[in-house]
Image (cartoon, rainbow, N blue to C red):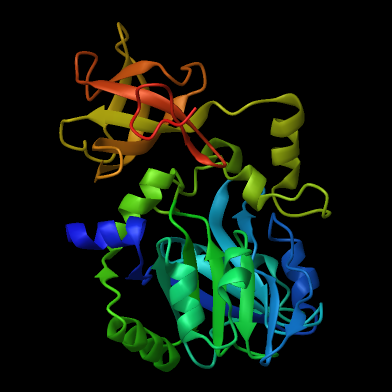
Length: 355
């Protein structure tokens, strides 16, 4: 990662390709009704037309769960048509896509709903930084700075009324700087990338996205989340689970945890200090204990924190603000911090702490 691309992403604007995403259409006689029973989150509301041949709507996050409540994948879903009940667009992380497709083959009745690739493959880039709204408004004649600034995470703006989008713009909340995902066919996306480059926008790597994501404190499937993860463990329940929508696969387990139980581990932020980031899977120990209390799932050198930081799982009895040891009971100190919907819960003395 070039230092100037990080500085652009946090101070101005940068472009990051997102090759780790896959897109599918859910079609058939009753795609929405069938998918509602599989996705843990809310279905997107009907879109509303906007001037310029587009529509505004939502692309909310959701979980795809086993009957025991473990994640098959996380996802986002949007409408391919303005009205409710029609075809849907499904976004999956590449790390979980094959398992999710197997899950759909098992639980979706093919006479009523099928998951198929779009006729034209879709891809995504993310535009990140405080000047992102200005850049998009200068590039897309149907968007304004005020409207883009007003969008919240998951808000979506389609260009094209029905069917696969000419362009889908979605507010992204996985990183701290202002960010939008641009989803389109390869030809349209290549044209946009060329336009951004012509405006002098630097392009960052996948490593830059990982740094920004870990600095935000957002888990990713295939890194901090896998098939053994419960939504409550990863802290994604508020974004991906709608208990009021009716039955979905895995709901009973999640309700039982919510009402009468607890999970045995939680995703936490890890502060490693000036040393190198430890490898994934490094065990974490409490002082004086020979038994691991958790493990590192991701670790990066953070320009924003001025040290190595990471995300990992720690047993529930170990409270945030504790100090653990990395690698062995006598290993280097690791500061433990809570992660909530806003990101890292920092304490006085931490870089970026703002009481």
